[in-house]
Length: 217
Image 1 (cartoon, rainbow, N blue to C red):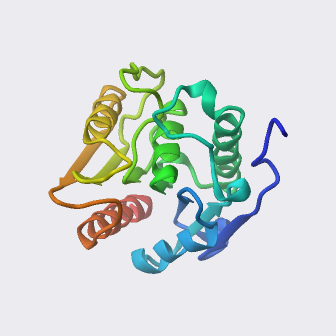
Image 2: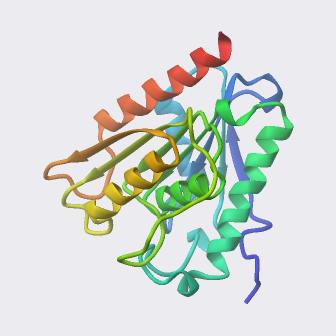
């Protein structure tokens, strides 16, 4: 088994070239999904001038076990996945788009990875969006990170009937992000399972609009 399974996987793109974009969204797909499918969010967000980059996980899965399994049980895949996101983030940064104009957005397993990456690389991101996900670690884990997320807008949406994501983990993620200085909009939807609803997409559009507006000031 390779120690870096995601290193050579593709990165799908939509929108203008990074050199001409006002902001960038790093899209992280869920378990068993495809990066290309995450580009549907680009059409849903429908914000002119935004570049979208969606890395592909090897064999469609970022890490093999539950996000609430012991960390070691998901290695080396988890470290490789985080490194993959950092490579894409560096590509965005090297093109002249700073963290304040970069949004991390993930769904399901991708939401867990996006929040974990955002916390581990804490800086003033334009935004961090987790749709049905939360920080990675076993039940009872203590989520303490270095860095500063001041200025970062975060949106965490999840259903209270989600069979994969305990509401308590969403609350823990919100608390950890607030401890790092982020401004968090957490929404728990009564009776909702594992998925994305229009209220969440409205929140995402508003967040992206704010980042683009700030970039043009």
